[in-house]
Length: 431
Ligand SMILES: [Zn+2]
Image 1 (spheres, rainbow, N blue to C red):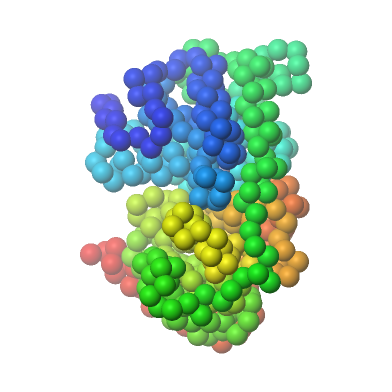
Image 2 (cartoon, rainbow, N blue to C red; image 1 turned 180 degrees about the vertical axis):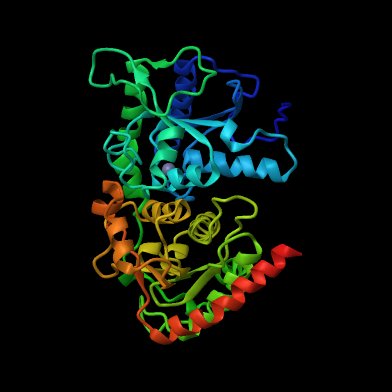
């Protein structure tokens, strides 16, 4: 198959081919070094076709300029979105099943959900016993729905690491892609991948959470309509600041029309007919967005909402400075409201993981319910049990635990409106 290379995202090696696993892991480590120097999580990845040709190589971009740029900008997730961007612009790339993402660190929940939703193969160098999908290193994938475990065992490879140190290991899970003629990682390269990541972990988590406490936040509803912050916000979501919940974490039926409108667009764009509203500390509706899964299966409503909020703050901070942080707070002091609740499918793993990557540390005691849904996809008891199987970052450190909104009128209004939403989406797709 002819491969056409198009405008890659980051530093690339388009003429490079890797038949040696060690060489490919070295390139992922090179990317992780760049991430270290940028002050973000030191993780890098390379996307390879079935001949070992490099399609793209890039690194984590969660933090830029000392501030959260995009909590979803992990290497693997960015490579997947890059792939679908290329497909949309007409590039002739192989299907995901014929592509391998080689990463310096085991994928987190968000990235594992993204990989499983898309069908790529993955090769991981270092284990991540804190947030990796193979956190117990046994390749039994306890955080995946039982139906997805054999899929991961057939597509997620953990190659042999040579040597007699604690970094050495046997190969586990899926066999390596066949194009690798050399199939072992040197223990020193493995040590570099792990130690680089560990060197940045707590510092970047602190950066992601380095925000004003809620008592220093100012209600953005007091801003003039022509304030640059309001203009930039409404450029993303024109209806921002036109609804306010009665109090923090308790949206009422007034939110229903916004959720349903975005859910209808989501259905038209290949989603399940869901949407995500972000309400700030004061209850203001800041964003309510659909996904864009017809473009990329990893562009769920939650992914686009948390990314849009972070990038808006990052962009405005460059222009307006500290006042941005006074009016637009960290999402841990607000509430994400999903039209449809999560289940145990790969697309929900993306969202639960992305929520974890948005928080990174324990939820604030004054706001433990920053992830809520209106209409359940599975019973709350099943969702609670599932969240307890997630890797330690999510289940123990953060305590990721969605719950249903408390307002019965909101639940009824959205439930009554949803069949119409789904029908609109189906009609649109049939055209
Ligand atoms: Zn990740």
